Amino acid sequence: MARTSKTEKTTVTLAELDLLSDPRVRAAYDAMAPEFAVARAIIAARAAAGLSQAALARRMATSQSFIARLESGRVMPSMRTFLRVAKATGTRPSFGLEAN
Image (cartoon, rainbow, N blue to C red; front, top):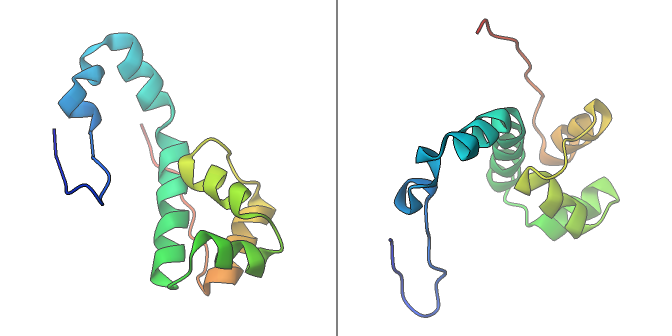
């Protein structure tokens, strides 16, 4: 397990906890891959724009807690919300579908 100083958070990965060896956990994790990909895209756009969650929320006329839910993958944004994130971060959306 990765340890850091007292002022930093401890980082634990799923691999370190060996959770993904459980087939049920692995299936649930894989099923959420699209949500995680969208969350990572939102986080990356916000970070590249140099914005905090609160600053992005202000630009989108929403709450910081909503941005946190988007970035956690707990909420899948609508297309309209995704476009608002793009506008607020000065990015353009990119979409695609891939064969299995």
